[in-house]
Length: 150
Image (cartoon, rainbow, N blue to C red):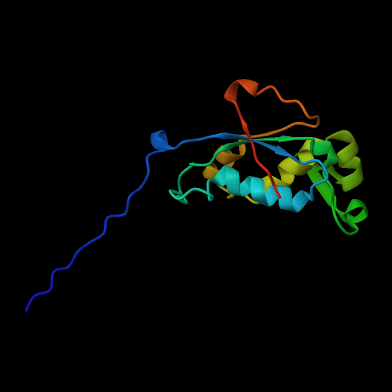
């Protein structure tokens, strides 16, 4: 007696069929790591049922009020950001409080970038992140939806 073997085909979504939305995330009085992890999930597309690890099916994310993000513990004194110019002696080390004074959007960008893949796909996904220090952004034409972090 022979058994019938049925095969299930794996459906790989097309990038053209990806419904990419725009979201606005308000970082006012939110913890840095929690904002970054939720934004990384949105950028990557892991919240969608058609998620595929090797495709860019994620959404565009706009973060506003980046200068009002919080950190917990003693990170204000201990957290360091390094930047290297490429020249001998060109290593610049700044602590969290100094970076927040000069470039508050870099703190969130750095946190999100560390949670994305370290390859071509990660660099492509990272371009869909927009970070602004104030409550305003120039992307009203895309009709972004408000994404609640709570």
